[in-house]
Image 1 (cartoon, rainbow, N blue to C red):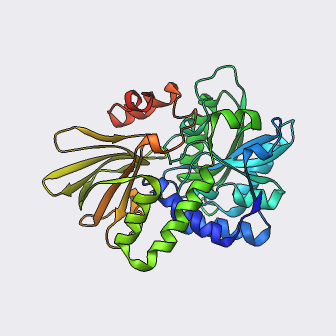
Image 2: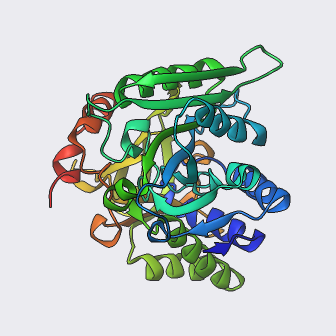
Length: 362
């Protein structure tokens, strides 16, 4: 167990931005919420092995499309979502975890943990960011015998879009309801879900996922004084990652629809054109001949060759010079979420590509 500091916030946002895979929230939001967490309290990061098997852990997150611009999530919304879940759950909640790393999502649970005297658990539902709540549900998405609680809080107060919603039911049905609520609230909303014992988290989560982001962030911070190329080299070295190509953003068809950003980004590299398939995050990359170069759950990130900083889908501009980066799935811990076949049909239908055949392969 250790107390998280502002240095950890900065590192978590830096490293989480790589694992964000083009989504995973926003840098400014992550720094703001993380800064609030270490200001109002002393959030503690614990290994799941430090907790008894029956300690209840809740996933704290946010749901929506990162490119949306009509949302409003305050720090108090994250706290209230967790409080509402605790009020509707019979057991005692001990800790919070995040379903994914990202620009802000790595630190999803830090503020409510600090405010409510809970611990931050060093585990993630997925090492990288993903588009649907089902993909971070620790293998629960397809189960019909498990009743969960999911809560969302947030929305624009000035437009009357603020919502609070508590739902109980199967993970699949409740996740769909929450996605609709996110869209109605303006595109993004704070959430808390899935109270589960530590014994389940130990078997099904990506253990050490938060530390992985913080450690990568520290390597990035160390390299930054030496320029963009040094940062890119440090990211590759620290993660066993590689650059698939360097080139110029040619065109994007990504549009917002139903709390998702969906479309394609085309990148012209020397002698080739890469197609990046987007559903909030980068889910696959093809070359000009249609050959698949990388697929979820590989980490897929666009990095500015000018600054060395990851660039989210919503901030890509035509003509921007970027590197397309990936970490092969063999180099990252994989949770039961990734191995859950029920999470892929929705994404494959939206994108019109195959994902499960790679994701589920050994």
